[in-house]
Amino acid sequence: MLEIQNLHVSYGSRAVLRGVSLTVRPGEVVALVGPNGSGKTTLLRAITRVVPWRQGDVLVAGQSVSRMSRKEIARWIAVVPQSIALPIGYTALEIVLMGRTPHLGFLAQEGPADHRIAAKSLELVGAAQFAGRRVDELSGGERQRVILARALAQRAPILLLDEATANLDIGHQISVLQLVRRLARQNQYAVVAAIHDLTLAGMYADRMELMCGGRIVCSGKPREVLDQERLAEVYGAQVTVLRDNHLPGPVVVPYGDGIAAAVPEAT
Amino acid sequence: MAALALSAFAFVVTVVVGTAVGPASPGLGEVVAVLLDHLGVREAGLPALTDRIVWEIRLPRVLLAGVVGATLAYSGAAYQGVFRNPLADPYLLGAASGAGLAASLVFVAPVPVLVGPVSLVTLAAFGGAVAAVLAAYLLASVGGTTPRTTLILAGVAVSSLAVSATSYLMLMSRENTMSILAWLLGSFNASGWHKMWFILPYAAPAAIIVALHGRILNVLQLDEEQAAQLGVNVELTRAVVILAASLATAAAVAVAGIIGFVGLVVPHAVRLVLGPDYRLLVPVSALVGGSFLILCDLGARTLISPGEVPIGVITSFLGAPFFLYLLKRQRTVFM
Image (cartoon, rainbow over all chains, first blue to last red; front, side, top):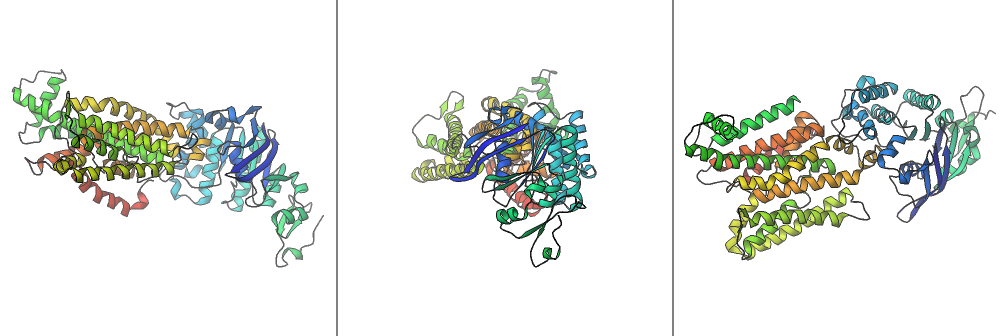
C-alpha cells in the first residue's frame, strides 16, 4: 500500500533523512519511534511531499506520489499533524468537514453524505458532543480528537499520525490507539504513527521502526525492538524494559533514582 | 442566508437614501420613480431636471461609492484569508502606493489629463497599482513558490519605495502638491457612469472569483501544510485570489483614489458578527463595505457643503476608532 524507497530529505545543507526505506501493508499499524530530531516528523511530512525529496521515492498503490496531484494524494493519505493549533471561530464540525475537501469539486459544497461522514468521524473519536462548539474553546485533548476526526473524514486508506496522542489523557490515548488499530484491522487501513511513549507504541503497533539520525536503525516486532541496551544507546538514557506475560507488552520504565532498579527484570 | 439578505436590503436602502440626500433633494419617492423609469418598469413623468440630478449626477456617484466600497471590503477579506493575517488589507502588496506614484507622475508631467472620457490619471493609477503588486509578487517568488511572509515583506518594501517617490514628487512640484494630495485622499467628486464602466469589468468578475473560493479560504485558515495535505493547491489558490483581488483593487483606487480602512475594518466587523466562514464573509463584507462607503461619501459631500471633505479622511476618522475598539476586544476577533 505504502512504499518508501531510499528517501533522502535535507533542510538546506542539513541532511534530515538519509535513505529511509519502509513498506506498510494494508491492515498494518507501524509505530515510528526514536529520539527528538531523529527524523520521524520529517518522514511523515515527506510522504505527502509537503517537504521535497532530494532522492528516493514514495509509492502509493504502486504509483509515485510525485506524479499525483495534491487532491489525489489527499484521497490516499490522511495526516494528523503534531500541531493542535486550529483557526479561531470555527466549530468542531466545520473543521471536520474540511476533511472532505479532497472529495469535493471546486464549486461543490458539502452535501448530506459529507455531513454524515463528518458526524460519524466525530463519534468515532468520542467527540460528537462538542460538534457545535468553537474549537478555540476546546481543551488541547479535545482539539486533538477533532483533528483526528478530520483525518478520518478524509476516508483515506493510509493514515499518518504524528504524536496524535501526545495531548491526551491515558483513557483517550488508549481509546484513540484502539480505534486506529481497529480501523487498520476492519478497513484495511495502513497506519504509520510516530509515538513517543514506547510502552504504548509497543502495545498497539504490529511493527516498530526505531529511527536515529535520519535512518531506521532497527525494525521489527515491538518486543524485538524494545531492547534495553539498544534503547540506552539510541536515546542515551537508562531504561529498564519489563517483560511479563501478565503485561500487555514490553513496559519501558525510566531507570533513574533507583525507582525502576527496585523492580526485577522479568522474562 | 438571513445575514446576506439583510445586508443586501441595507445596501439597496443606502443607495436610495444616498441618491436622495444632497443640496437639491429629490424625495425618496421621486428617486425610486426615476430608478423604476430607467429600469423600464414604469414611466415616471417627472421634470427633466429631477431626472438629470438623480440619474446623471447622484446615482453614478452613489453606485460608484458602493462598488468601490464593496471591492475594497471583499478584497480585504480575500487578502486577510490568503495571508492569514488580521492586518492584511487590499493595499498590502502596494496597490495603493503604486497607484499613488503613477497618478502623481501624471499630475507632474506635462501631459493632457483627459483621454476620451477617462482621465489619464485613472489609467496611470490602474497601471501603477498592478505594476506594484506584480513587482512585489515576483520579488518574493523563489523557485516556483512564494512564501507568505516574504510576500508581505516584499509588499511593504515596494510600498515604501513608491510612497517615498510620491513624497519627493509632491515636494519638488509645489504647484501640483494640492491636486496630488486631494487625489491621494480619495474622492467621488467627478463621478459619472464612465467610471462605473471602468471599474466593473474588474470588480464584478473578481468578486465572483473570490466568492467561489470561500470554502477553500476556510481550509487555508488551518495552515499551508495542512491545507495542502487536504488536497488544496495552496500556491495556485493564493495566486488566483491575489490576482483577482488586486486587479479589482487597482481599478477601485484608479477611479476613487486611496480610501483607507474600508478593506481592513469591514471584514473584521463582519467576522465579529457572523464568524469566520468565508462563504458568508466575502459577500456580506462586499455589501456592508458598499453601504459603508456610500454613507461616508454622503458625509463627505454634505458635512461642509458646498465644499467636500476627502472621503479617505472620513473613512479613517470613523474606521480608526472602530478598529481600536476591535483591538480592545481582541479575544473575539476571529483571526
